[in-house]
Image (cartoon, rainbow, N blue to C red; front, side, top):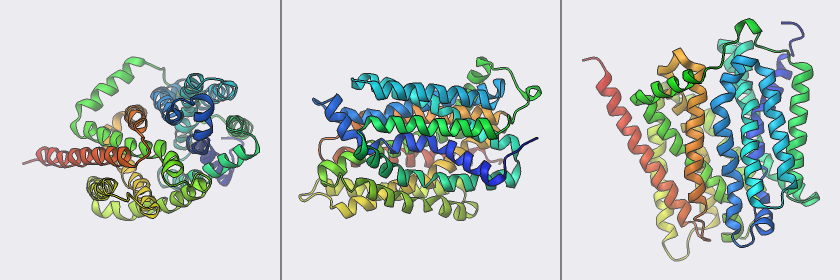
Length: 401
């Protein structure tokens, strides 16, 4: 392929496309109080829907962006996603009602699914085997820094402008990414390798996946684990603000926890070959049952939970995500090698949409205490643990006699 980017430049561009999602979620966290007081003064808690509405749109977009890029090519789908993302950011920036902002955030999520999903397809087009794994690993290492710095960036933008300035930053970020890609990255899927988009194939993949017991159970557990993560993200800023009176230092604490929790992927990579994916997920969920159960008990006692204990619990929740989500995705993909591309889209979409549907109502239960968060997470990890034990029994039954 002519004019291929150098490998370091390609990795940097891939990391930037991956980072669209994390930047779009985490940069909004410091803005929630300001948005709530301006657009929903009677119920500022509704500002949390700014996060779950984006996740919902992203999940829906994940259904289609991969298959569409197989039909029309990688770059046109990324261009289309960027256009939707930028247009939605303009609408959100100009909005005077929370409802319009939420609708724009759903559209933003739809657009953001383009660069996030198709970037992985581009890597797969250009590299294979260990080289592909190496590039993805390096890009993901860079990507993990975004949740650490995005709240700080959001807080800085608010200090210079107001919450609307964050949407202007989203526009600039997307424009930089798409212009960089347009000028430097050739189309990686030639016309002769493209496949027509057929909705019946997507529906057939959906039926086949949910008919397979291990895949079905893995998607359900992945939904619950993502639900835990999204619920923590929706409630974490109000908790820092209302319970601990630390709204100003929230971005710094959040960044520190994100950096510490990023080591989960490294630990998982070191242990998963020896212990296996199912065992890693089961043990991690079992540990979180004990931790969140203890937190739930402490919320019911006089004096509540200290800020230090909450920080440690927050770190374990983010750590749990790093120890489970990748493994669960691999478990679900393993029997689906014959429809790998379609399966990746369906798994990501179903789990994300259902997790957003769980996290949104739980987040709205925030009442100035940790009780809704602790109870919600305890229930989700307990259900996930039970489903993983059932998965083990199903796999034992499938072994040849």
